[in-house]
Image (cartoon, rainbow, N blue to C red; front, side, top):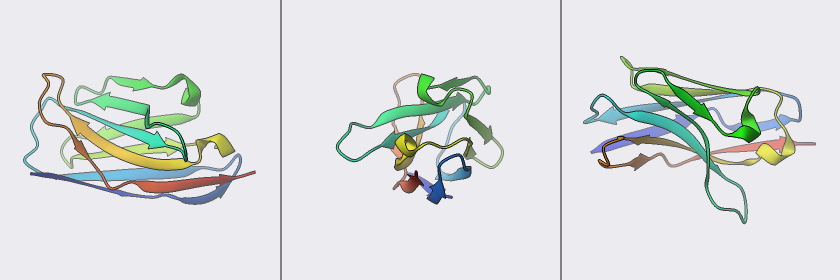
Length: 117
């Protein structure tokens, strides 16, 4: 079993920054893909950014130039540096771990980010 634990959410003013972190534990294999998704009230969960264990990243258009995803394979961690935050970034952010070959997928419990205008 794999467990993902997020941290770093909170309340920030528009234009501010936050850093989210996620630690994965359990039976984790390489290669894998870790990432962040978010779900705003009344909306579907959407991709924010992903990064492979070979450090290839993919960001949603809405966060390009503002958010940076990174990971540490040795520590099984993934982080999301969020700069120039906007009120529309307000959501619950979820950490995700999966495999490109269609293996199991795991989710964290979510961390709330609120950006005030």
